[in-house]
Image (cartoon, rainbow, N blue to C red):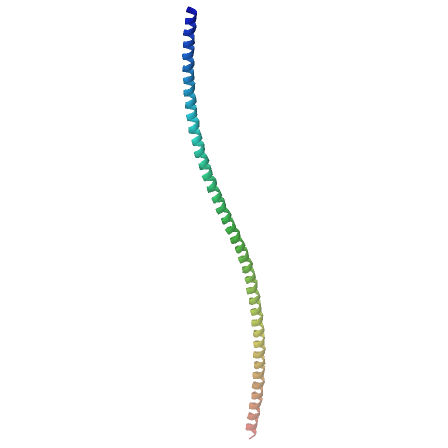
Length: 142
């Protein structure tokens, strides 16, 4: 019986040690499960933050696209404005040329009229001088 009692005592000790190891293992698993749950919560939180950041990035990309569209429109407007200014400059230059030609034509016409008037005045003056000379000659005779 001694062997049986010894075996029984060993069984009891082994059984208690196994229970003790099972308890330690269960505690470690519980601790690991708690850590895993905590990490899962952190991962969920990070995923939420990432989703929020993705939403913000998408919003910013939309705003950038909108601003790029506005810049493109402004650049197109600027290009059109430059084209209009060039056309305007050409119109002004043509107008200035037309005015210059008109003024030169009027000056030539006026010069021609003035020269004609001078010629007429010279003719009248010469005629008057001749008439005066005739009158003087007639006065001397008389």
